Image (cartoon, rainbow, N blue to C red; front, side, top):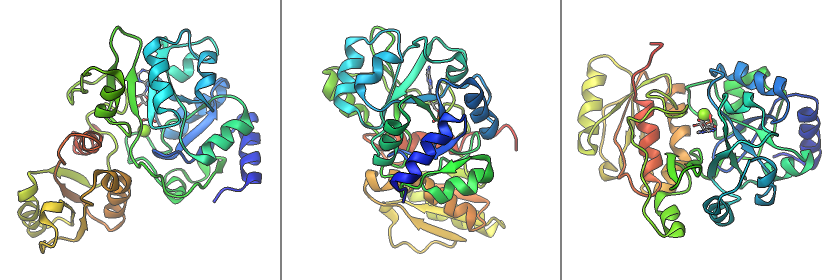
Length: 324
Ligand code: AMP
Ligand code: MG
């Protein structure tokens, strides 16, 4: 676990233009000084991420928001007041402090305040904004422990702050508040229902076919093993069939099949609670990769509450892959 002197050292690394992996409540981020164009460029290089794909700027508190954006609409103020620190990212009009390199050339910027003591301590010690996408290679599964980060990035990152396993486990919900009504660009740790309760009206859920920003590509958040989604009641049969055909099959066993014997290479029972499932999802996918599975059979949860984010990540993990 990161100590005060680790945090001081990490702040120094950021000031010197280096990259720091930091824990947040969602997933681990690969952080750089948001105002250092060369450091920001290194993030893209290390991740293998196309430069047109925007990053999130992390700030130490809602009171800093005005420093990073052109204007703060009332809706943004309301949502920030309610959900920050927390797994909600707001897309606003870019302030001059944010280099275009961090926004992929967009005139908007994504901002959030992470709800993790180590991230907040680093932001406070550093004093500026930290731009940080998830600390994984482009397209692969986001890391939820410091060990995952080391396995993904090795020496490519200058310093890794260990903050234990991430509590939420899936990325933040991204809400665009630049238009007349807010819209969800990516479902995540804050549920649509929570947003609607605060706003007092219904908002559009993201369409699964809508490709607009990274994290929205058909294949993303993907393990090495191919992911196949079937109806929950068909998971055991599908897994057995594929295993008989010579695959090393990993199974994410839905709660409705708990206790069912499945003929497969590795079986992971999925927690019945959506909070538990979100927290474990990426760890399960990594574990099945580590255990040598080449095919993962899973089913979609009911897509409400956190189930919307889990379903979104599973669909993208199962999406067509351009490189394979
Ligand atoms: P990652 O942490 O790797 O998921 O990357 C940050 C995510 O923030 C990207 O996947 C984008 O979807 C999103 N994002 C960042 N900036 C913007 C923006 N200006 N407009 C829309 N989405 C954004
Ligand atoms: Mg990512």
